[in-house]
Image 1 (spheres, rainbow, N blue to C red):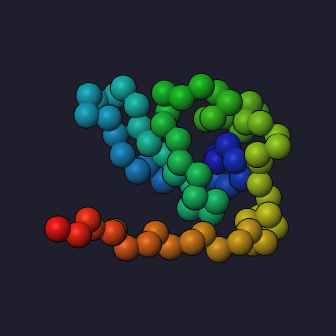
Image 2 (tube, rainbow, N blue to C red; image 1 turned 45 degrees about the horizontal axis):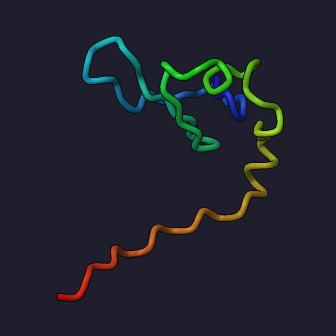
Image 3 (cartoon, rainbow, N blue to C red; image 1 turned 45 degrees about the vertical axis):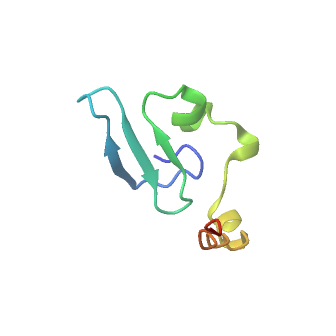
Length: 76
């Protein structure tokens, strides 16, 4: 379950280079990502700070995430 929005479907994103040390998990609904080695306040719904929890309504009403602008290269 996602610690931030309680969505039941979590995706495995990446595993540590050393097998079994940590994994990166992500929520497809609210886009929250966390490493399994982080403290409970970041990884477990019951310990996640209430002021940062989201509902499906919060997610639907959220402003669009801006696109990353193109990389600016230094003039030579």
